Image (cartoon, rainbow over all chains, first blue to last red):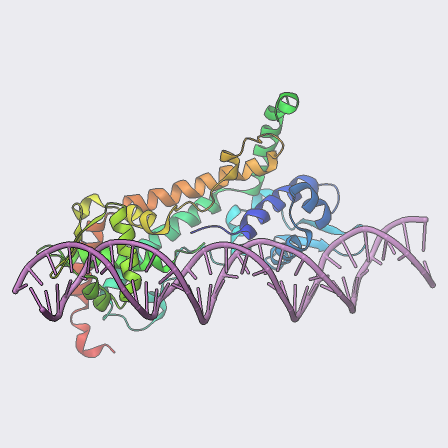
Length: 151
Length: 151
DNA sequence: ATAAATCCCAGTAAAATACTCGGATTTGAA
DNA sequence: TTCAAATCCGAGTATTTTACTGGGATTTAT
């Protein structure tokens, strides 16, 4: 029941992208450097995000990535689903298989998995990338005076 | 972002136990047979559930397991946490590490992980084992007429 | 005494994760 | 036109986690 590095890194990368790609495209190299993520690994994550239609790429020198739509229209759920595949905690076989009745006990747990899945979905779809960008700006301002005293 | 077989099997096992242990202790063998779970694997799961104080064991011939407290006082969250360890989707390093400011970007994602964690926790703690037992009885009654026509 | 059970610990095959690496292609700029 | 910076693409691989299996010790009702 853990989110993998794909989701964790990927979300950080997209926040970074949202912040820095307003003026021009942002390269994988610069995101990787700022976020301290392996460049070639991040490359793979960006490929998935592109495939999911969340970012667009500009090839060649000076190229990079930009958001495909405004940060307010991209939810954390969109991002995590693109990277982690299905976010469902349990992919219920009861729904797919046609043996219905014999495993009545199994079926009861279906109710549980549905509840969990719904609550996760709701939580992540509720949070928009733009919120996180805003939140980040605030945090940075508060943390600023810390730069001398904070190890 | 998946629940492992530990959680899935374990919940089924405890529902089974709740149903059958009213009169006497229930052996791992019988649960495993009914639920079609490997006996020795289930043994390990029961050990965890015992350690977590959710079930009690009776050793020796005729022994087995029973719930440590009424099914109404055991939540799905209790069970899953006992088996899966921490249910948190992300164990946030930002909370533990004392390097605070430098990674302001990272910190923003903390907000997301907290939201996800909270919603999962709430969902699973809300559902009690007793509800699932009740639900199971209903399902069985409805499904009964199916026994002749249903493959 | 025996058989049925929990208990306990160690090993292991398969799958998933978290990467790395090499090279092809595109493109802006010198 | 050449170069370098970038995306694109596919394959390989070490580590970790999962999902078990197996063997033997201990407890206890009959």
